[in-house]
Image (cartoon, rainbow, N blue to C red; front, side, top):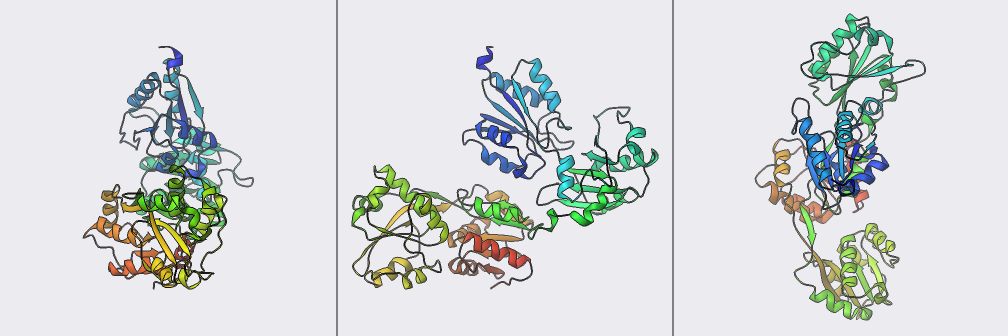
Length: 510
């Protein structure tokens, strides 16, 4: 086959688990790839960078449980390249640090396939760093070694020179060695490493579910068994393990170890998820709503044709802004059509979206509920024309209140909210298995859809419901919830502050 017709394969290191540790080159290639062939240890959040039309092929690669054997993975990426596809082979950690990337590169070279290797941060250093363990330290460790925790199956004799590494290197890091930990410890001690040498085992390093067990070579096996540590995990042996007591940082974040469900629409949930992740939470994204076009555009189209007659345009959400301007442009108009209309926004996020379009907001209420919007409106609006582009299904309190003040109000649906049950099975499983600490709700519709999806599964009293505002909290209470938190400021930032305060022991349910 002509090389010009072939695709290219990129062996990309996904890093140790925290998706923000991907390299800039790696992120760039994921966004461009025709096909992504990914391992279990590559964080699924990285796939959000992919093109919508990219093919995703999951090949597993858990210990002793490969979705595809290595030989078939190699054959797959070669076949895809021969089809003219540009392929990202997304591998946990670094491709060439016990990632079998060398085997894949060799096979590609032999097949005449062009390839590129993109290094990733190895868990050998990253997991240790996230556990507060520097693999080298001027006073404690001038050398380190990275060793496989299990060699190729069927080997009669070990290639590891235990007599050399046991005492010849200050820090030893064993990858993929939990199942073989007792043998590793025995080999080290038998070859001269003192039994009182500090040791640590770090499970799911750099993930929000990271767990770290520390001890010595004399007791680490028993401690790991007692703590039920399972793969994936790394083992660190050496005096540097003692530094954890001083510089552990990752596991001290305010939401570390908390498992929080985000129910926002996929298109808008990321800001909440990112904020919670940065505070250490394990975030499970289960969108229960999604936004689509309204049944028809008759009302908004008529309003757009007469847009210069409106005195105010009142936006109730960032979604309302985006969908309004999408329709404005689709009908052949642009921002200039707004003329002298003043703009009002409920909430800073809505105002920010308008500002990003070059539009300033004349009015934003102090609280982001209809009653306050009406009570604080800055002008005599009797006989004034007000346009409210919003969701098809929304409370009538706002337009009714403005009409009571004498305003001529046009409510124009620009989108509608429907149930998203794409992750329903997994969500029900998590609730049923009681592995959720908190569920976040950003609207009454997220509450209702969530309960419609989980059906007769009971949300335990120990599961907190974090609600963005009073209307959402009322919906949660109607559904029988009692452990309800409510943000003091009805924004995503306010909701995050509310959650953090609650878990710091300073917040109470309402």
